[in-house]
Length: 358
Image 1: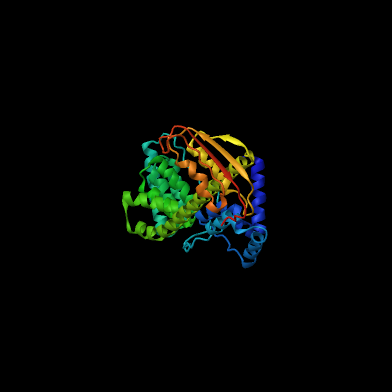
Image 2: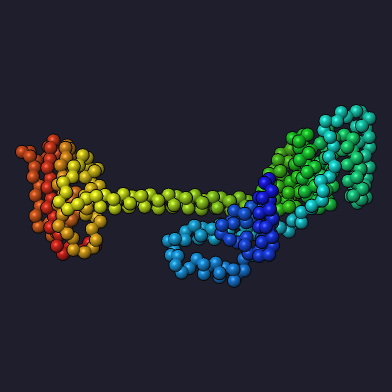
């Protein structure tokens, strides 16, 4: 990672330590959600902080301008998780790992098995640190054994060192992707760190390979938290989608209004315009009629010339305006009256006086 970015991250962490309320900033919602998914304990937002936030949102900003912030407030609601068995993460240096490229002889395997036996005896006597030493020696002798890594990982779980346990479980699964003990150790260790979704995934996998009562008990603790986080994420994604759709709809309306204003400004009193389709006629007449201000309307004249087999749309304008507002209306047609007319000329003279739009 770029050194400058690491420095910036350190400064940000220092600010969070000085003022933990920063984490409740709406723009950091994604970071807060990520911390909670890892089982981190986020300090609750105080009343004064909420008050300050409300003050910032009120005043010059209307409700219509706050949809995104309101959504953030909903998304940021704390998840009620059971963190009873969560422990502080261990930050010890990584344990020794064997070299997988080493060619293991039969004598080395026998010696490794002897060290493992000593480790099991130490575990039965509660001497966990001594057990770690013996099993580590066994790993150095036979680094190709998945069970040795998984066994040491299980001891790290007993020592409440979940990060070390996960490293060993990863090593075991790299050697044997079907290592039931590897999944079990990693699932329990992740639960100890509050990584509920990942823990549930590992424990479900091991339950398919080698189910036992301990796994069933762990799943009962882990799955409720995992389901809550999954539901929280679905809720967040739904709100994000709704917000994007709302934004797109607002942008569409703004474009339509801009085009409408442009169309209105382009038309002038007494101007003769050419219409080439019923759709274009609807658009032009709607701009002229619907968008007049609710005051005395001015005299204007629209001449429409079109070629069409359907004359019904010629009556669009007269239908949009009350009869009382059209003292004079002339609809000149050809020799035949009906939809079969191939050429129509419509002329509307609208004299608007005291009509107020509803």
